[in-house]
Image (cartoon, rainbow, N blue to C red; front, top):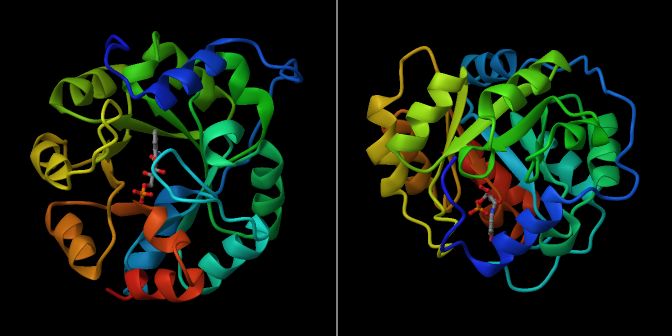
Length: 252
Ligand SMILES: O=C(O)c1ccccc1NCC(=O)[C@H](O)[C@H](O)COP(=O)(O)O
């Protein structure tokens, strides 16, 4: 794990909360019958669709304002317009998310759903069922242990990295689904060149996800040309007409 030094204040605050026990977290150990992410990707390929993970992201430290429409309706619109999978923020304070949103969304759709949160302790895994969970290399002390704990519960695990050193850590821990975040969590700036610099050293048999900052159809093409097996997009879908935005990227 890298040190937390020089993180954006919002990220430091989220991490502080994640490391403390939160009320209602004494849930029983969860067991998930997960929808296969790789099957969903194969289905998108077969149908000529860009493999898009559309994110339900009501707000964020880099978003102006908050979207207050029903997250379930937003999620259904994303799926109706071709999203291969969904990502649902469950962090409440800085992203306007909740585990209840995730629970309702997963019940309403049939695609795989990623729980997008800052999971640093095993107990956090038991808060809600999802098909995938996110582990961010930079923030997890025992990546191998937490990855195993998630997989033992039935989750598929998206392991997020930002550079080659973190990629090595992820692979050493046994990650098979890697997300390269184009957003630098220290300054919250986005650079699609991040994915392009890390992707060439990712082993062929890894499922590779390009995350953050993907806005235009040209960005989609750029990330796919650089080797992305899937694209995780939040802001560009949530800004305006969610159906139209999803369709535009899925058909890029
Ligand atoms: O999006 C933020 O402002 C943010 C701030 C601090 C930590 C994480 C943040 N985003 C988390 C994400 O990973 C993104 O929501 C996701 O990759 C989608 O990114 P985008 O398409 O740029 O909204």
